Length: 221
Image (cartoon, rainbow, N blue to C red; front, side):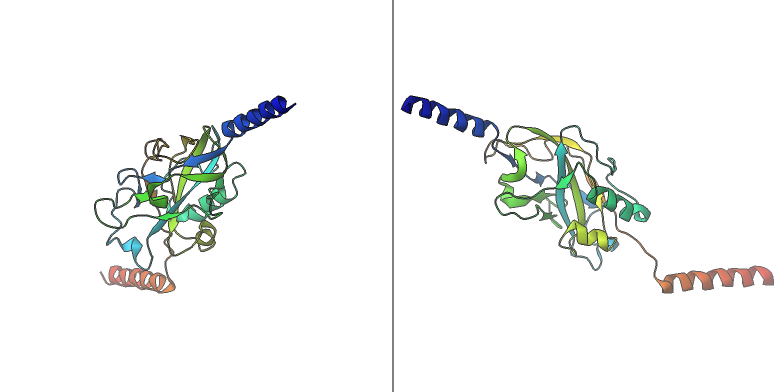
Protein backbone atom coordinates (compact mmCIF):
# COMPACT_ATOMS: atom_id res chain seq x y z
CA UNK A 1 0.00 0.00 0.00
CA UNK A 2 2.80 2.37 0.97
CA UNK A 3 4.59 1.62 -2.30
CA UNK A 4 1.47 2.44 -4.26
CA UNK A 5 1.12 5.77 -2.45
CA UNK A 6 4.73 6.66 -3.24
CA UNK A 7 4.20 5.80 -6.91
CA UNK A 8 1.03 7.88 -7.01
CA UNK A 9 2.81 10.82 -5.38
CA UNK A 10 5.63 10.62 -7.92
CA UNK A 11 3.11 10.51 -10.76
CA UNK A 12 1.38 13.63 -9.43
CA UNK A 13 4.72 15.42 -8.99
CA UNK A 14 5.74 14.53 -12.55
CA UNK A 15 2.39 15.74 -13.84
CA UNK A 16 2.69 19.04 -11.98
CA UNK A 17 6.22 19.64 -13.24
CA UNK A 18 5.10 18.95 -16.81
CA UNK A 19 2.22 21.43 -16.53
CA UNK A 20 3.77 23.88 -14.07
CA UNK A 21 3.95 27.66 -14.16
CA UNK A 22 5.35 29.21 -17.34
CA UNK A 23 8.23 31.69 -16.97
CA UNK A 24 8.93 34.70 -19.18
CA UNK A 25 11.70 37.28 -19.59
CA UNK A 26 10.12 40.60 -20.58
CA UNK A 27 13.03 42.46 -22.09
CA UNK A 28 13.94 44.03 -25.40
CA UNK A 29 16.97 45.65 -26.97
CA UNK A 30 17.25 49.19 -28.27
CA UNK A 31 17.04 48.02 -31.89
CA UNK A 32 13.88 46.02 -31.25
CA UNK A 33 12.29 48.34 -28.71
CA UNK A 34 9.81 51.21 -28.98
CA UNK A 35 9.89 54.67 -30.54
CA UNK A 36 7.72 57.74 -31.01
CA UNK A 37 6.73 57.10 -34.59
CA UNK A 38 9.10 54.55 -36.13
CA UNK A 39 12.81 55.23 -35.59
CA UNK A 40 12.35 58.62 -33.93
CA UNK A 41 14.34 59.16 -30.70
CA UNK A 42 12.36 59.67 -27.50
CA UNK A 43 14.42 62.50 -26.01
CA UNK A 44 13.56 65.96 -27.29
CA UNK A 45 10.75 64.74 -29.51
CA UNK A 46 7.77 67.16 -29.55
CA UNK A 47 5.40 64.22 -29.04
CA UNK A 48 6.94 63.66 -25.62
CA UNK A 49 6.08 67.14 -24.35
CA UNK A 50 3.96 66.96 -21.22
CA UNK A 51 4.26 63.20 -20.96
CA UNK A 52 6.32 61.00 -18.69
CA UNK A 53 7.53 58.73 -21.47
CA UNK A 54 6.36 55.37 -22.68
CA UNK A 55 5.34 52.24 -20.75
CA UNK A 56 5.17 48.77 -22.27
CA UNK A 57 3.28 45.63 -21.32
CA UNK A 58 2.15 42.66 -23.37
CA UNK A 59 -0.86 40.59 -24.34
CA UNK A 60 -0.82 36.86 -24.97
CA UNK A 61 -3.04 34.07 -26.27
CA UNK A 62 -2.95 30.49 -27.51
CA UNK A 63 -0.32 29.86 -30.17
CA UNK A 64 -1.48 30.90 -33.63
CA UNK A 65 -4.14 33.33 -32.40
CA UNK A 66 -4.57 36.37 -34.64
CA UNK A 67 -5.10 39.67 -32.74
CA UNK A 68 -8.04 41.85 -33.77
CA UNK A 69 -5.69 44.84 -33.94
CA UNK A 70 -3.68 43.20 -36.74
CA UNK A 71 0.09 43.46 -36.85
CA UNK A 72 0.71 47.16 -37.52
CA UNK A 73 3.16 48.64 -35.03
CA UNK A 74 2.11 52.26 -35.57
CA UNK A 75 -1.58 53.08 -35.87
CA UNK A 76 -2.34 56.58 -37.10
CA UNK A 77 -3.54 59.33 -34.79
CA UNK A 78 -7.06 59.06 -36.19
CA UNK A 79 -7.53 55.40 -35.34
CA UNK A 80 -5.73 55.13 -31.99
CA UNK A 81 -8.98 54.73 -30.07
CA UNK A 82 -10.31 52.17 -32.56
CA UNK A 83 -7.20 50.03 -32.18
CA UNK A 84 -7.23 50.45 -28.39
CA UNK A 85 -10.76 49.06 -28.38
CA UNK A 86 -9.65 46.09 -30.49
CA UNK A 87 -6.80 45.33 -28.10
CA UNK A 88 -8.83 45.73 -24.92
CA UNK A 89 -11.85 43.77 -26.13
CA UNK A 90 -10.02 40.96 -27.94
CA UNK A 91 -11.57 37.69 -26.67
CA UNK A 92 -8.40 35.69 -27.32
CA UNK A 93 -5.69 38.03 -26.00
CA UNK A 94 -5.34 39.36 -22.46
CA UNK A 95 -2.77 41.53 -20.68
CA UNK A 96 -0.03 39.71 -18.79
CA UNK A 97 -0.04 39.48 -15.00
CA UNK A 98 2.94 38.57 -12.81
CA UNK A 99 1.90 35.45 -10.88
CA UNK A 100 4.22 36.34 -8.02
CA UNK A 101 2.84 39.83 -7.39
CA UNK A 102 -0.58 39.67 -9.05
CA UNK A 103 0.24 42.98 -10.76
CA UNK A 104 -0.02 44.02 -14.39
CA UNK A 105 3.30 43.41 -16.16
CA UNK A 106 4.59 46.82 -17.28
CA UNK A 107 7.91 48.62 -17.65
CA UNK A 108 8.96 52.13 -18.68
CA UNK A 109 11.16 52.41 -21.78
CA UNK A 110 14.70 53.68 -21.38
CA UNK A 111 14.56 57.32 -22.41
CA UNK A 112 18.25 58.11 -22.81
CA UNK A 113 21.70 56.66 -23.37
CA UNK A 114 22.77 53.72 -25.48
CA UNK A 115 19.79 51.60 -24.42
CA UNK A 116 17.20 54.22 -25.35
CA UNK A 117 14.04 52.60 -26.66
CA UNK A 118 14.62 49.25 -24.97
CA UNK A 119 13.34 47.94 -21.64
CA UNK A 120 14.18 45.41 -18.94
CA UNK A 121 11.34 44.27 -16.68
CA UNK A 122 12.13 42.69 -13.29
CA UNK A 123 15.84 43.50 -13.66
CA UNK A 124 16.07 41.06 -16.53
CA UNK A 125 15.02 38.10 -14.39
CA UNK A 126 12.31 35.68 -15.47
CA UNK A 127 8.96 35.70 -13.70
CA UNK A 128 5.86 33.54 -13.62
CA UNK A 129 3.20 34.47 -16.16
CA UNK A 130 -0.17 33.96 -14.50
CA UNK A 131 -2.29 31.43 -16.35
CA UNK A 132 0.50 30.07 -18.54
CA UNK A 133 2.05 26.61 -18.66
CA UNK A 134 5.76 25.80 -18.63
CA UNK A 135 7.49 24.79 -21.86
CA UNK A 136 4.51 25.85 -23.98
CA UNK A 137 4.25 28.09 -27.04
CA UNK A 138 2.01 31.15 -27.03
CA UNK A 139 1.40 34.13 -29.31
CA UNK A 140 2.60 37.39 -27.70
CA UNK A 141 2.31 41.03 -28.71
CA UNK A 142 3.94 43.96 -26.93
CA UNK A 143 1.67 46.98 -26.30
CA UNK A 144 2.92 50.50 -25.45
CA UNK A 145 1.17 53.55 -23.98
CA UNK A 146 1.96 56.92 -22.41
CA UNK A 147 3.47 56.65 -18.91
CA UNK A 148 1.16 59.49 -17.94
CA UNK A 149 -1.39 56.72 -17.43
CA UNK A 150 -0.89 53.84 -15.01
CA UNK A 151 -2.71 51.29 -17.15
CA UNK A 152 -3.58 50.74 -20.82
CA UNK A 153 -7.26 51.08 -19.90
CA UNK A 154 -6.66 54.59 -18.56
CA UNK A 155 -4.66 55.50 -21.66
CA UNK A 156 -7.43 54.20 -23.90
CA UNK A 157 -10.06 56.18 -21.98
CA UNK A 158 -8.02 59.32 -22.69
CA UNK A 159 -7.54 58.35 -26.35
CA UNK A 160 -3.82 58.59 -25.71
CA UNK A 161 -0.62 57.12 -27.14
CA UNK A 162 -0.69 53.61 -28.54
CA UNK A 163 1.86 51.26 -30.07
CA UNK A 164 2.00 47.52 -30.58
CA UNK A 165 4.42 45.04 -32.04
CA UNK A 166 3.98 42.25 -34.53
CA UNK A 167 2.52 39.03 -33.08
CA UNK A 168 5.27 36.47 -32.41
CA UNK A 169 5.62 33.02 -30.86
CA UNK A 170 7.13 32.79 -27.38
CA UNK A 171 8.14 29.59 -25.58
CA UNK A 172 7.74 29.80 -21.79
CA UNK A 173 10.43 28.46 -19.49
CA UNK A 174 9.97 25.77 -16.86
CA UNK A 175 11.56 27.83 -14.07
CA UNK A 176 13.48 31.03 -13.46
CA UNK A 177 16.81 31.31 -15.25
CA UNK A 178 18.74 32.88 -18.08
CA UNK A 179 17.69 30.12 -20.51
CA UNK A 180 14.26 31.72 -20.95
CA UNK A 181 14.11 33.75 -24.17
CA UNK A 182 13.69 37.53 -24.39
CA UNK A 183 11.05 39.12 -26.59
CA UNK A 184 13.65 40.44 -29.02
CA UNK A 185 15.16 36.96 -29.44
CA UNK A 186 11.70 35.49 -29.99
CA UNK A 187 10.97 37.66 -33.02
CA UNK A 188 9.50 40.94 -31.79
CA UNK A 189 10.09 43.76 -34.25
CA UNK A 190 10.62 47.39 -33.27
CA UNK A 191 7.31 49.12 -32.58
CA UNK A 192 6.28 52.71 -33.16
CA UNK A 193 4.21 54.63 -30.62
CA UNK A 194 1.65 56.99 -32.09
CA UNK A 195 0.33 59.96 -30.10
CA UNK A 196 -3.21 61.14 -30.72
CA UNK A 197 -3.17 64.69 -32.11
CA UNK A 198 -6.42 66.58 -31.53
CA UNK A 199 -6.28 70.23 -32.70
CA UNK A 200 -7.30 72.75 -30.05
CA UNK A 201 -10.02 75.37 -30.74
CA UNK A 202 -7.34 78.05 -30.99
CA UNK A 203 -5.66 76.09 -33.75
CA UNK A 204 -8.91 75.92 -35.71
CA UNK A 205 -9.39 79.67 -35.22
CA UNK A 206 -5.92 80.48 -36.54
CA UNK A 207 -6.48 78.23 -39.54
CA UNK A 208 -9.74 80.05 -40.26
CA UNK A 209 -8.11 83.48 -40.06
CA UNK A 210 -5.35 82.32 -42.39
CA UNK A 211 -7.86 81.10 -44.96
CA UNK A 212 -9.80 84.37 -44.74
CA UNK A 213 -6.63 86.40 -45.25
CA UNK A 214 -5.76 84.38 -48.35
CA UNK A 215 -9.23 85.01 -49.82
CA UNK A 216 -8.95 88.78 -49.23
CA UNK A 217 -5.47 88.82 -50.75
CA UNK A 218 -6.63 86.97 -53.87
CA UNK A 219 -9.63 89.32 -54.35
CA UNK A 220 -7.40 92.41 -54.11
CA UNK A 221 -5.14 90.98 -56.79
